[in-house]
Length: 562
Image (tube, one colour):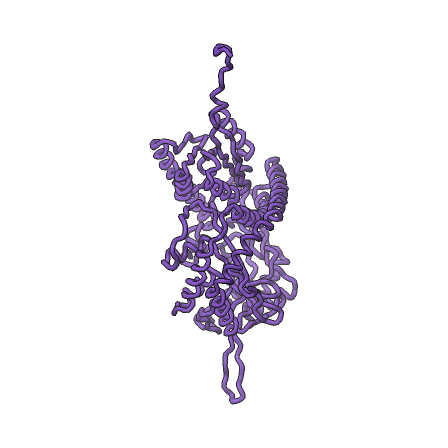
């Protein structure tokens, strides 16, 4: 064949196109207010890939999810797992804040991508991490973006504090009142207003009356649950729910706001000792006299606990009630001997029963001394038996293959369910955009949908992790054996109560009880978190090179039926 007639080769067909992972996200409120949808983000990102010759590897889609945390986003977590396998060459987003609103999270993810030689690009902000100057600009813009977010949050907080000082309600559900929107003469937007819900208000009055006539928190909760009353969120009353109502000055006509210093932190040491407390514009449910009497009774009881828990019971919360599945907590009874002396018996009892009363469940108590001793003995048997550990690993490594098809089926169904929920969201947003409902109505309706969506996404996340584990290598005997032996060694040491609890919660997934009040199963969990813990404590020698992207292995087995 003559060279002049030979067809010219298209270089684009001989070179493999680079692959791009597209990550898109929008919270429901953002879409309703700002108007940029998931579909629009996908469209413009695909256009860029076409222009620059990238092949779209996959679209990672977190719909209706806030950017505050990276942990609760299944699509982002899957992207990171695929990055570990170097499935693509670049991650492309519409805006940096689609990935994360926190600078530390954003820089950490991009650094992890860089270790895998995967670049990151933001379309609208023209940021890339393929050059040193691009990295510098990206880091500076990430810091500026977080500063703007913090500044906006501070301005919003100042505005809400100002409203609270005026005696206005800043939103949120509370038993005894309905939140309605109304127009204020001085403001263009609708404002939230509290209106007494008489049916619920009668429950609130009964709670204060019972407490002021000698009833305790649990007695009140049990009484209300027996009568079929529920909280504003349609749940059974608990001790904490009763206490929250009794300590809320809202019911005497006051507005309390800014109880926590940092809105993103919800720990005990985050409590503001000087919150805003002002006369509210709403009608009170109880009288000033009732409120003062309640405070007086609480003050007289403060510093006088009727039980002393020294926290030495390591199975609290890990052991599960055989009837309702709630975590077991410690309870005590006093027995009188024939000689007149008394002895205190300690039991693990149902937490729901202890917190909410006999309407919810029964005590289903298990002697604490028996349970603690039994669990330690079972762990000793496994930790010192090589044949048992080998049998566990053989069974687990072989059974995973049979489990995958069912998990994949469940995963597909969850995607369908999430899609249906998303359609519901879009309909609600459409009604809001038409002006049929207010923003407050929109938020209330979306809360119900979001609650169901969170449950589905959590199930989806767990299945995704399990499916990811199927791609990992068989679990190594030496790793498991070393961890179990170190776990057993630690338990025999003179640990503090807190150290013992931490170790138990690290390794034991749950303990179940039979109808005969005997321990039925002890489920041990081994994963990278456990491995890392013992590595840091220099208890287990390193067995492999781990990196931050590695898919965490996770095995769970029952040591009572080996």
